[in-house]
Amino acid sequence: MKTIKIPYHTSSLDLHIEERNLKAIISAKPYVSDFSGSQEQVVLAALEHPLATPRLQELAKGKKKITLITSDHTRAVPSKITLPLLLAEIRKGNPAAEITILIATGLHRATTAEEQRQMFGGHIVDYEKIAINDAFDPGQFVDQGILPSGAGFLVNRLAVDCDLLIAEGFIEPHFFAGFSGGRKSILPGICSQETVNENHSYKAIASPYSQTGILENNPIHQDMIVAARRVHTAFILNVALDSEKKIIGAFAGDLEAAHDRGVDFVRSLSQYPAVTGDIVITGNGGYPLDQNLYQSPKAVTTAEACAGEDGVIIMCCGCADGMGGSYFEKLIKLGPPAAIDEYLAKIPAKETIPEQWCAQIYARILKKHQVILVTSGLSAEEVRSANMIPAQNLDEALAIAYNLKGKNAAVVVIPDGVSVLIAKPQ
Image: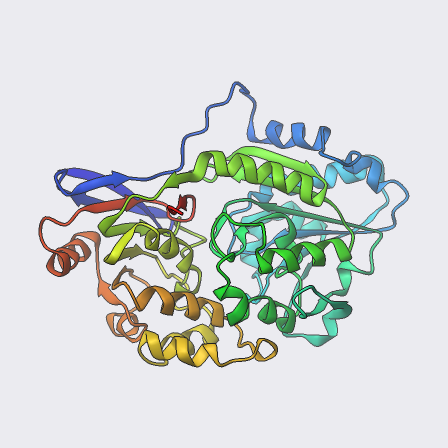
């Protein structure tokens, strides 16, 4: 018997599995570096040697209004470390600059004051100017034209009415944008609901290029890049994190050059060839990424890449925040997976419903695979209404899966499905 820990909420769950059933355990490769410095020193080294731009302190000289975009409560950006270093670098070049920290929420709810303290630390909350993007408040946005897809580009005016625009974030495989980070701070981060929805339309999500690890020809990525360039994003700081959410790499400088370097680094650690199993078990990286069901298709798509033709997926998701978005909840309960997909396919891009992309991806997976959801945040009835099978723990989930696939089923375990990129055979 082997015990494997699956990240779950702020801790982990134990998976007990007979070794004869265990076909593979897939995790991101550990990063081994000759650099013995602290996380702060990793970030400082990146800020001191930016890619394809002058140092941030040079860019800040003579600028009056500076907007610094950061991530919201659904992302694991280590802002307690990165924000103070960014602010100090700006003020080395311009102590008098008017700096606004803009929280990029996309379509998520507003980040609470308590969450801000947890994310940024009390000093920043008490002494810095912080604004929160509200995708549903038309007064926050200005029209910046049309994106390559034909989508309208409505962006937070704080990104336009400034002399210098900076963004921070972190890079990991992303299940339809290819990779997170970089340009995503702008779109969807600080755009209106109309722009975000159209970027996440049924057609865009259904593109064969809108997949984990793919940037070239990805229509979602292409709109994001154009949006970030159009508002003159001058400098980014993106980090890569290990399984303990510690910084193992930092990439600063030009929007694309720094992001590309970070993507290469993350790909080198996260990419694995597909290993097919009858049962695939995964988690969504623990808190904050597994705080609701709306966030969890990230790991389910990773598991999908390893599930056999009708393989069973076991998903561990804390769901401390419940279902997540109200639009998603309504759509995922609309009916059987095929009916959900059929309904969404008829919605024109300009009329995209908020959060429909999540229901679309779940529907695609659920049409082929039974998904067993291990959660303490949703009732069994709620799980069933979302077309999934409820389980209280991994032992129960595995027993259900063996019932479906047989006691000799081959099991693939991907403890953190968010941190792994499965390369499907061509």
